[in-house]
Amino acid sequence: MDFNPCMKHQLIRKTVREFAENEIRPLAAEMDKGPGFPDDLMEKMKPLHYFGLQVPMHLGGADLDSISYAIVIEEISRVSAALGLCITVHNSVGIYPILRFGTREQQQQFVPPMAAGERIGAFCLTEANAGSDAGGVETVAQETEQGFVLNGTKIFVTNGGICGTILVFAVSDMDPARSSVFIVENHTPGFSVGEIEDLCGMRANPVASLFFEDCRIAADHCLGKPGQGLKIGLTALDTGRIGVAAQALGIAQAAFEESLAYAKARQQFNQPISRFQTIQNYLADMAVQIDASRLLVHRAAALKDKGQPFSAQAAMAKLHCSTTARTVTNLAVQIHGGYGYSKEYDVERYFRDAKVTEIYEGTSEIQRMVIARDLLTRPV
Image (cartoon, rainbow, N blue to C red):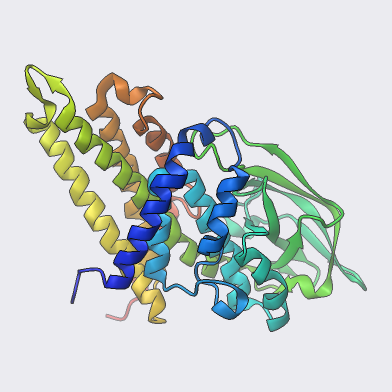
């Protein structure tokens, strides 16, 4: 087993890191002050295929393998976790379900503009009474002669303020006991965006509530089969968890790098604080957790590319990486002392951004349930 990255993956990491350092990092702190991403930055990412990372070339994408995808998300999140969130949600739970469950006509209609970055994807599952309990969806899709009429409210929608193509989970009279998924575009009458959420972290991402009030869509906008919503959702989230794990890994990597540099430069008692055993222990623990996290992410990604079951491995990666992000950023603030609690240093932003990785796309508690279910159902 070769743990050394291949030349392709090394080149992808180098290329994305250069772009992230030159184009994203100078804007990251300013973006954190308010929701939204600069238009010129989004334009610069379009020809790099960041909006169609795993989309087949004939639909306008880069057709990358899953490890390459994880590397891109990690490197972008290393400088701006909020932008990394935008990209991973757009690709993994925005585009991927259409590629996996959509008809050829749906793929040709919706995927190319999404892969080009002209329409940003959003995934609308969460409601006031439906989060970890995906079966609690109350949004309704009523079938008509022309198609469907949607009524309901979705909350905490990542990319909500900039979304163009939205996957909406709703209960329909075709199968009232189970949810179905519908493709809605933002110009559809009856669709509207609520106020942008004022969140602790990921502040550049315009997370919002989305409203569907007598929102009429065509019959061919139902994704997959009626009642297949849970299957589509869980399949999408398996892929999404690789992306969120990579995002959390990027946050941890950034916090570690800045802590290491600070510990070497900061002088106390006439010597760098890196000479103190406690600081060395912190740095060692951070490095071990990050290295283990990357291996978990790449294992889940490799299994996905081989067409093998990867749900439990994606949950392990998401659980460990999000925990690592929280732990490492907390230690980073501690190493920086009072400066770590100041917006003058980026570790303060990393600290705020890290927490939500333990919550969205399945809480850490849900990840443990997924892992335990896999363990208990394996053949003896």
